[in-house]
Every structure is written in structure tokens, then in C-alpha cells.
Length: 521
Image 1 (cartoon, one colour):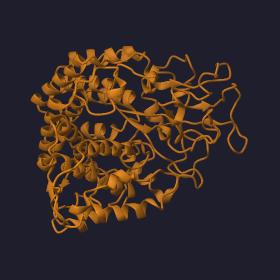
Image 2 (image 1 turned 30 degrees about the vertical axis):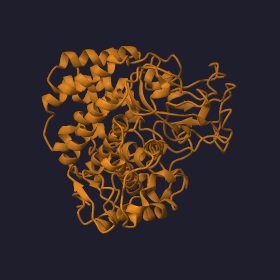
Image 3 (image 1 turned 90 degrees about the vertical axis):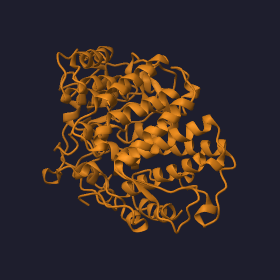
Image 4 (image 1 turned 180 degrees about the vertical axis):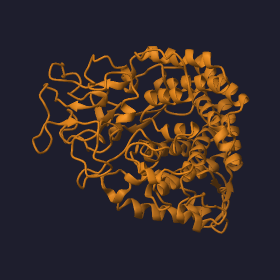
């Protein structure tokens, strides 16, 4: 398999020079049929169950803070990784994402391309008729292939496809955006038909595909289908199907749950549709300060990721305080203070951390120079920042479950599906129904009902509900907002739409002449 082997070599080389990140690619990511790669014959996968387990295990890469997560989040108005002194400089790899000045040589662009194309190849092996997969095995492979193909489609706009018996002398065919969309939807129909029904709260079976997970992914793809087709607006028939798919998910017992931050524990809840057993340490510690600790992590945080003041200000609540009981909506979270009983939360707040920080005993935390650790809304910029600049965000909490070592990250949950249904109604011109659905969720989250609904308020509502859940870039593109200016994004770098797609990695272009570089690179 020529293009996988060649590109992975470059991916490892680039990853080795990046500091302050977790760029290690799992061994399972690059396992391919070696007889095919060396020009031998393919006679089918001998152990289909084992292959499917390997494929699902490979998805644990989604717990990484770099690569796919960074492309979806750090490139948006939701997250940035400012340089503080020499910390998180990393040769500008984070800053170029926020500033939309990445190139085809960007390590995260390359690694993500390699990882998910490798997954597509592995699923192709299982789906080959010579593997004799059962109906349910075929459904699992189709579900993961649809997911991996959608990721490449969404990020890069074209999808190379190599069949199991094509040797290194064959250049993979390349699916256009519309062709890839057709295959994703067809794969999801196979998955919906053959995957098991997994009821809400059945946590032991939600770490693999189910009918609800496949329906969720199909709704997400259909909501964005007009973008992939190049149409100006969503088709009413697509929106009708989104609504129907979400209703079918609800029929399996899934519903939005009260207690926002309880959803991100590793216990069962009514919202989680699909979770993966990947560690959530990145999600906890990459923004917390070095001196913020927990019983299972005395070394403290990594003092990197922050959010923008403008994103924080999109939440309901007083601008000057995020103390517990300050009148903010639940999703903005709260920050303990000296009067708060901190024993149950280790002194670390939930949601958006701003202002003076305290420890588990209620004592003021200082930075490494002995100054009060006060997280500020403003930053100096993308570089030149002090230790305390920038609001930090946290959804997974170190005192919940088995702490920062637990392996339970949510990929799909019902509140997202609920908002997809609301948006589908809105795009059909059914504003009253859309508003009712949005306000149902806002009421559950302790936010004041909206009096009207626009595209801007719908996008903002998705941001408030789904921050840091690896969907912000896709949402911004669908609403035509990914190329706008925002804080600390150089006005000169605001593009004309070309940055809605990432570049095809340079080495991939050299390896497969059927690929065409995306416009603007």
C-alpha cells in the first residue's frame, strides 16, 4: 500500500520535532495487509472480529489534543493555544491553526490524513467479499468506514480509496466530494440496518456502533450535505430525514439530561450515544495551570489551551464573575472561591475558569513566581503571554469517576442531535418549531428562553452546548463563519473561503497523481 507507507514515514519524522503535544500515532493506525503492500494476493481477512476490534481501538486516537482535535477546535473562535514565554511555541504549529496560515506541510494536517485514510483501508479489507463478514460485522465496518470517510471528506474535500488487492504500483482512485458523500450515506444505511439497537443508558454497549450512533452520524452528514454538494442551501428532503433520524434516536430512549457536567462522567446517562475508551487527560490538563493539581496528578496542568473572551461572553451570566451562584447559565460552569467548600472538586472549577484560582483547601493559588493566579479574559496575543493570561475551559473533571486516568470520551450525544433537529426545522423555514426545541434545551441548562431564532443564535447555541467536542469547525463552515475574523486572528489572514478545506499533504500529492491540491495552497 504505497501511499500509506510513504506518508506514515514522513508523519513520524514531523511528529518527532513537535513539543508539548501528544503526537504519537498508535501502532494499530498503520497496520495494513502486508501481502498487499508487497504486491502479494489478498484472500480476505482471516479473523474478522479481531480486525473490527483493531479498527475500533484505532479510533482512540481521537483523545489526542493534536491532529483531528486541533484541526476542528484550535482553528476556530473556540480555542487557541497562545505561546507563554517559550512554552507552547512549538515552531508556531498551534498559532498557524488559529491564524489560518497553515500549509500542506503542517504536521497535524499530515497525521490526520494518514490516520483516517489508514482506517478506511482497514475497513475496505473487512468489507471485501473474500472476508466473508457477517451482517453485523459488515455493519460495524460500514459504520467506521462512513465515519472515517466523512472526516476526510469534511476536512480535505476528496477521498483516496485503495482496494485490498491493489498493489503499490496502483495509484488509488480519488472520490470527489459528491461521490464520497454518496458512499458515506450508503454505508450508513448498511450500518443502520445491521447494527444492534442499544438503548439509552446501556454504557457497556455504547463504545461501538449502534443503530442510534449510525443515525446520529447520518443526521450530521445530511445537515452538512449542501456544503459538500456545493449548494447554496440545504435540501428540504435532507432536513426532513435529519428530523426523522433524530426522532428514531429518541425512540431508543435517548434524551437530553439535566446536570450538564454530570454527562461527562464515566457513569451511564441518558445522553451518551457513542463513547470511546480513550483517556481524557488531554481534555483536563492541557489548559490548567502548572500549580493546579488533583489527588491523582500532583504535577499539575500544562498551561496551554484557552478560549476567547468573545466566546466566553456568548454565555448568559455576569461578565465580571463566574463564581458559583453568580447567575450564569449552567453550561458556563463556575469557579470556586475562598468561601466555597472545595473538598469535593479539588479546588478546580467546571466549564470556564476565570479570575483568582483556589486549591482544595480554599487557599489562593499563586503562579510560579509567587503572584496570585488570576486567569484573565484578555491575552497579549498569540505570543508574549504570561502564565495566567487566558480563560481556561474544562468539561471532564479530575475528581469525577476515576480521575484523569479514566478512559471515557463522548463522541455523540443526544443534545447535539436535538439541536440538529432544531436546525433542520429552521432551515426548512419552520422557525417556531426550531425555537421551541432550542428553548427546551436552554431551560434544561438554566438559561433564559430566546424570543426569536436566527442563524447566528443557532450557531451560538451549538457553541454553548458543544464546546470542545470536535465539531466547531464543521459548524462554522455550515453557517458561513469559519473565514471571519476573530480575536488574535490576523486580519490579513482572513481568507476568501479556501481555508474551508485543509490542503492535501504535499507527500500525498507526490505519491498519488490522482489527487489535486485544494484551491489556495
